[in-house]
Length: 257
Image (cartoon, rainbow, N blue to C red; front, side, top):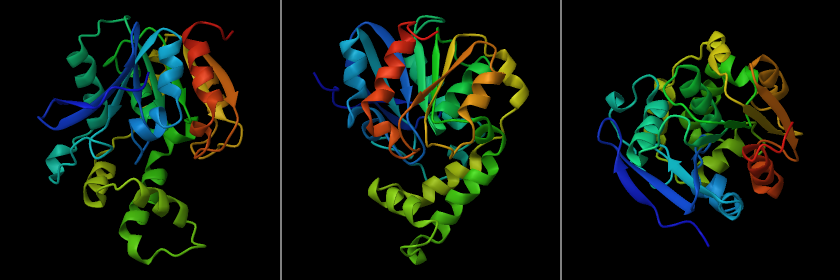
């Protein structure tokens, strides 16, 4: 059983966003990483199927500018907290009640998930933040600046450049670069003190070679009720391995201490 074809709904500002679904049962909202998509993070590598086989419904959003969702060209379409608002629009659209769903995010999706719970925008039962470390929250401006440089220098980046891997991935995903830069400009700062508000059980899941967003273990240590779970891989390839999906399922089932 694969994912259903994408359907679309209107977010808070009318932007059409795509959502993909697989399985039935307890709902799990899944948020992908920067310049990726539901297909690239969750569907291509079978993580949606692992959740479905475990009795969950995977509800996988494509953020604006990503996947099958629209990429608005006006800066007004990228207000502070825009991705959190997109996630909240999905939860509202699906009719998910407080404490009656789980939330999973990878990288940028993990940042959005943490932000949404820390500021009481979303109220899941459990949350898994994957591929995100403490520095990825506190030093987002540095990370965003890296990707802005990739966009700005896109046509001149050559093999051997430290920007080449990011350029290759951006190109492979067919991301609208003008809209992507607007999105990066609209990303708001993260109030690290707000992490104390995240009192639900949370997993900080990260590849054993992944330091792109800093220390996931340090993130788990500052959250009130968190477990650090290590899986194989770097930031780019940990999502390709079955262990990531297995760790998510086991945590949601309460099988991690």
